[in-house]
Length: 616
Image 1 (cartoon, rainbow, N blue to C red):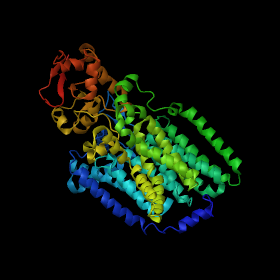
Image 2 (cartoon, rainbow, N blue to C red; image 1 turned 90 degrees about the horizontal axis):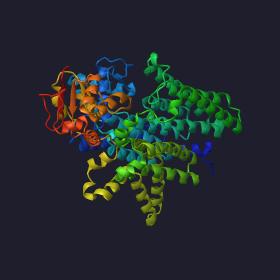
Image 3 (tube, one colour; image 1 turned 90 degrees about the vertical axis):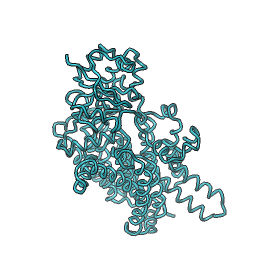
Image 4 (cartoon, rainbow, N blue to C red; image 1 turned 45 degrees about the horizontal axis):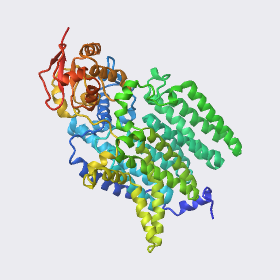
C-alpha cells in the first residue's frame, strides 16, 4: 500500500485520471458556464433597475474607470472630486480598473461611447469572473479526486456564483477578483504531482492577490507558510515546487510593485494596498525560500527547519523595521468618532458577535460552511485520507475564517475555498452510497452533506427561522442576504441625483452613503464617501450635521461647500438628528433654515433637499 505522501501513491492516482485537459475539463466547463450564465441573466438581469451593482464600491469603481478612460494617469490614484481640497488618495489597484476599461472601449466600437458600452462591460466582466471561478474550482477538484470530484466542484461553484451578488452583472468591485485568484491559488497548491509549473503559477497568483487588495494578505501569508513547511518536511522531493513558488513570488511582486506604484511612492509604507511594506516582505520571503531550496538540497530535516526559522526571523525583523504599523489592523488609526458613527454601522465590517446581535438569521450563511469545511479537513487528516492536501486546505480556510470572525466580509473567501474539500468528501460519500444502495444511512449522510456545503441553504434556514418560509424562498431574498453590504440608504439612485445634476459643478456636503452616487451621476465634488482614506471629508460632514447652525456654518465655509444636500431619510442622518436635537440636521428636519442657507429652486420631493450657501 502506497504512503499518502509518497511519489508512488501520487503517481498512481494520476494514472487513474483521464489525461489531457481537453478530454473532459473544458467541454464540461463550457456546459456548466452556459447554464450558469443563462440562469443569472434570466433571474437577475431581467428585473434589474440599474446596470451597476448595489454596493458603493461598484459605483466608485466605475468612477475610477471613467477617470482612467478620460486621461487620468495610470499611477495617479487620486480621486480629485472626493473629500476636502486636493482630493482623496484611493487604495485600489489599477489591475482591476484596466480590464473593465478595456471592455468599455471594446464595446464602444459597436454601440458608441457612453452608458451602453458601460452596461455591456459591467455585465460581461462579473460573468467572465464567474466562469473563471468555476474553472478554478473544477481544476482543484479534478486534481484532488478526478473527474467525479471535478463535476461536483463545478456544481458547488455554480451554486455559489449564482447565489452571490459578487458575480452578478454590475458587480465590479475587487472582491470577486479576489475569490477567483485565491481559488486558483488553492487549485495550484493541491497539485499532487508537485509540478513546478503549478507552483510557479501559485507564486504569481499570491503576488497578484497582494497587489489587488490587502484583505487577502493573511490567507496569502498562510499559503506561503504552507509551501515553506512542505519543503521543510519533504526536502528535495518538494524542492522544485518550492523554488518555483519562491522565485515566482519574488519576481511577480516586483513586477506588480513597479508597475503600479509611482517612483515618488517607492519608499512609502501603507497597510491597505501594495507598498514598500508588503513588497519588501513578499520579495524577501519568496527570494529567501528560493535560495534555501536551491542551496539547501542536502540539508537534513533539522537543517531545513533551522534555515526556515532564520527566514521567519528575518521577515519579522523586516516587518518591525519597515512596517511596524502594518502588524495591526489597517483601520486602527480611524478616528473614534468615525468608528462609532460610521464603521460600527457598516454590515460587512461587523464581527461575528455584532452579526449575531444585529442579523442573527445571516450568521449560519456567513460562517457555517467555512466551519463545516474546517471540521471535514480535520477529520480527514485524522483518518489519513489525503492528509497533505487537507492540511493545506485546512490552513487556507482557517485563515480566511479567522478573518471573517473579525470582519464578516472575509466569509466569502472561507466559503469559496471550502468548495474544494467539500467536493472531495461529497465524492467519497456518493461512491459509498452507490456501492451500498440498500444502506439508507449512507444515502442520508450524502444528501445532508451536499446541503450543508451550500451557503444559501444556511441563509434559507436562517431567514425561515426569523421571517417564515413565505418570505424566504425568493431569489432576491437569498442573494441579498448572502453578501455583506454597506448601509442601505436613500438618496443614492439616478432619480435621487436628477435634481442635483441640474446645478452647476459645486462642492457638495451630503450623507456619506450618497457620496459614490454623486460622483457617478454628477460632475460635483463631494465631501464624504464611505472609504477610510476619506477621514477628513467624512469627519467634516459629521461635524456639519451634529453642530449647532452657527458652528456648522464655520465647517461649511471652511470646507468651501457650495451646496448642502440634506437627506432626511438617510439612516446616518437620522442617527445624527437623534444624537444632537439642536444640530443643523435636526433643525433642517424641523423646517428651521438658518440665515446662511438658501433653499435651492431645484428640489427632490422624495429624496434630497438642497440648500445653497449664501455669499458673505
